Length: 200
Image (tube, rainbow, N blue to C red; front, side):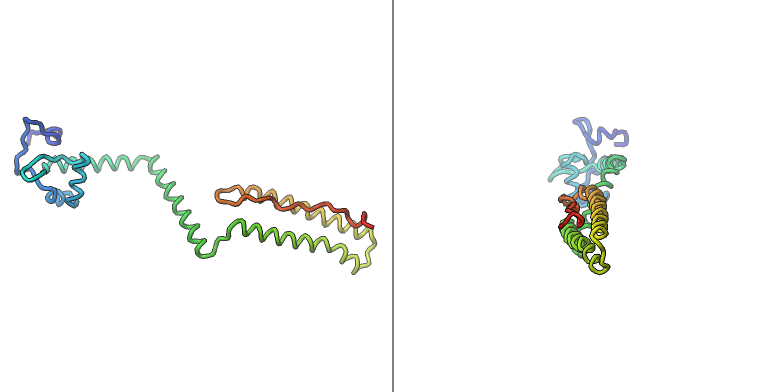
């Protein structure tokens, strides 16, 4: 028995006889390997552990089975140490963590849907626009401004709002194309209605 090779033990041919004293049951082998009997049998079905026919069922050559299981663990360790595989596992784990974090924030009410935020912002912007366009008339009435001065104030307010509208749209255009974002139309540009100096 001492002179047998691992190959002979793992695949005993007709000329190789394993002494009955070296054969153990799946339960006995499980105690040696720290596995359950069902796990031992599964490893045998997967051709990881050697087994031989014996009276009453299958039996396992103890030494060869221990060596085969050790080799199986070494191979699994080598596969798991592949840096590409490790990077992929980290990427998947990070993605799952981010997804769970977003779900938790939603459940706590810490995240608001992008569509709802944009709708609210459009409402605020429209209200602000209406109030700003009413400024020249109110200021003219309070300060008794003449028509040219009132028109100049109206023009400057419109220019300022136009610049603000373009700046906001440039910023939101990139933000609305991220993963999971809501694509929507840009904020409406400030129209160039006829200023007060051209009105009758």
